[in-house]
Image (tube, rainbow over all chains, first blue to last red; front, side):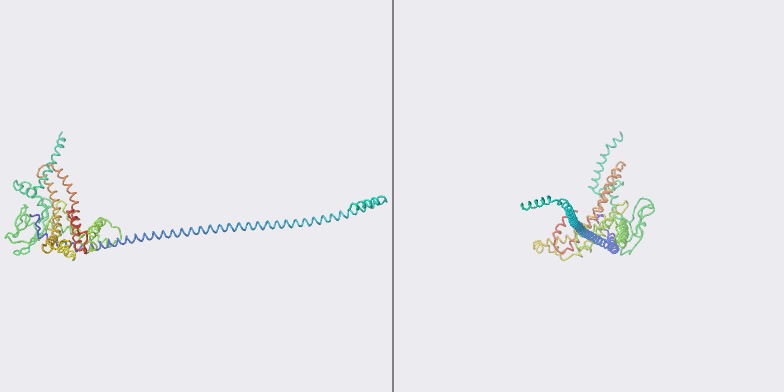
Length: 164
Length: 360
């Protein structure tokens, strides 16, 4: 029975010791420890949510950047296309102008050549006519020197007249 | 050949030792004490009871300096207050002698004239408890300082060992069982848990006192739990006891069985706390001491390794029990507090007794 018979002295000392330990630990250990744990937990929680937010923001920024880059690419392609078209058009216009000019020059040249040719031909004709007249004059002077030949000629003319 | 014979006889010895252990546990310590009285030899019962009982001196080993004599404080109306060293009860030959009108009788101090004494001595258990209190204060105040100075830093050293335990008490014992009002009870639960655990562990050291295996200590702890439970009891709590919902009216008025049972229940809960811790720790000590006693009972060296093997196993079990009992005591205290501060009726309360039973 000794074993299950609580001794008064030990009961008293246990009560005193436990209450003192409880009081001291409560004030100097548990209060700061529990506070610190709570503080640290909320700090970790805040940090995690902040990190999560930062991640989301990063993703947003990245998406924005990509969008901007895509827009810029489209813009660039458009500008290049337009520039290409403009260049082509200019070249074509230049070509067209050049060929027109050339045509015009050629035309002018042709007209000039024709004019020259006509003039030359006219001159040649004049000269041929003059030469012919002169030849005919000389011939006639030589042919019509006799009576017979003059008569033959007249005869010829009359023959022609009859036909007509 | 000899080795083979020895090997063959080993299982026999093992059987004998198990049998002896069973006998020892079944018959119990007092019978051994009776046996010891007859042949004046080694008495396991006396030895075991002596080791698990409180004492006025702290005996580490035999010899001139092996014993620490603790102060005796006795008070009686006739003699007043007397404070002296317990070494006064021993002469040079280490025999008990009367001192100043007091006699040491089987570890108890009585007055020669039969006056009623109030023994407030610093006994072995008290000294060991002071030691555990000092350890707790040093350890927890020092880690608390680190918490104050470096709140946001990762725990280090002893702090990183204790922090998960503190958080376990808070997150697994206090919060689920008490609910949102847990913060009020947390300092007590933490102190209770570490007080029991450290004293359990100190009790396992060779030559140490058996603090938590002493019913006076567990009585005080259970009484504090009872006082806190009653002091924090809400209307719902008292209503559950004297006007239990869901019980026929005549069981509450004409034949007041339910209020009576519930009222007794107020005291049986802490009583079970007291007995559980006391019995578990004392039983562990008795088993280990019994195993060592076998060596002296059989007066054989051969039984030594067997005893050591069993005792080593028991020691590991006791290390676990030391933690487990601290946990159970704290958990049940938290459940009682939770029941006391509960505002509304929940289904959880019906689960509690079952959980409790499972833990017993």
